[in-house]
Image (spheres, rainbow, N blue to C red):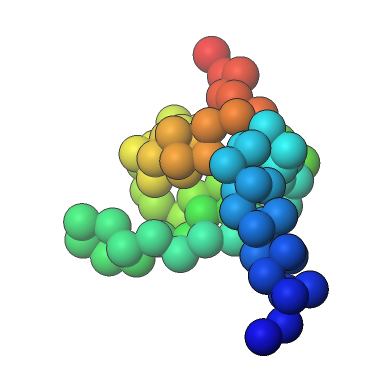
Amino acid sequence: MDYGMIGKIDKAKRYAEERERFQFSNFSVTMDGANNPHTITYQDGTWQCDCDFFQTRGRCSHTMALEMLLEGMVKPYEGE
């Protein structure tokens, strides 16, 4: 039994519960939308999505879903 790894697993579980420790700066996600998959990116506090709605409005259900999922770990939307 690797007791060192057990300690690291316990520490990882504590970290995962402390969401405020994590601040995302850049990532890319593929989401299965209702009609087809969409690529959503987050870079330095700015969201992008390849869906048509986002292109005309600057926000969409895909980016809002990720904001909800990652609440407290990404900057909140500061648009109009």
